[in-house]
Length: 151
Ligand SMILES: [Zn+2]
Ligand SMILES: [Zn+2]
Image (cartoon, rainbow, N blue to C red):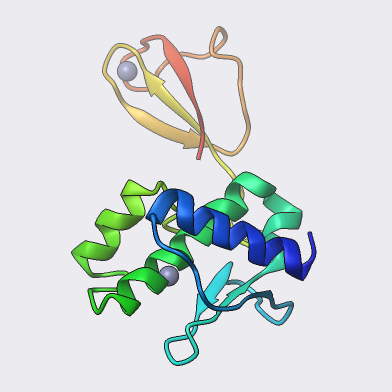
């Protein structure tokens, strides 16, 4: 995706989800490290991290665009545009924007865990390694375990 396509994409999302036009500049910024995007209060410009698109794909990237557009439109309308503001949270939810960008750090500090739950006593626990739930039982009540997914 080039600069021009990005500008068009942001303009289109703005019209489609916010029903308002985006009249400023949207640009890729390779200097952004861990953030997915940034909104500049003074120039009203938006910066986006190309790594988000590269690593997580278009769907996540669009979620970031919506997030930044929430800042943009609320700020321009003179309403609560910060993360803590109820108006921000509300709008973000309405347009289905991303609250947080998935981690962009190369080395993940925390390993992903598997979540298990006992079907009998409802005990929830996590393990680094996936195991066969047919072979193990709940340590507390010996009940049957169920894999609930990754966290
Ligand atoms: Zn934000
Ligand atoms: Zn149990």
